[in-house]
Length: 192
Image (tube, rainbow, N blue to C red; front, side, top):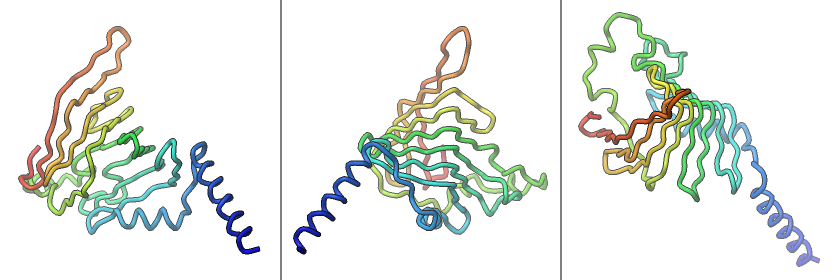
């Protein structure tokens, strides 16, 4: 009798795993809050609306917002993204609607943000150990620059992140325009 029960449980679990190939499983709110808390640090608070996962679509997160406690306007997100999709088997991260409105958070106009050292923005940044991956931004708006899409390869190194094969595609009705390049963020030296 116990053998039949184990077989039925195994079959049910196997069917659940197979069903994840065709659908997304929503994560419980308590787990999403714990994950956001883990991603937050002393100066940065991460929040998101919902998260789900599945084998075909990977991890899918909606309404990601990052708040910077050091900014003059704390309740305005420093960075926000409508949706983020992480497909680990393809090593692809897709972000739709990335917005970085300003570097000083709207500022109080007192010049406090202008007096910071250039490396202050990089202090305390710890990079996790992750393999290289492809990044795709769809309809980003970074400091008022809004290309149609951005694609690149991201290679994390010691204290650096190298963005290679960057392609920004600009919206235009007559001709397809793009800009190619590369960029390196050096957290140790505080340089871009």
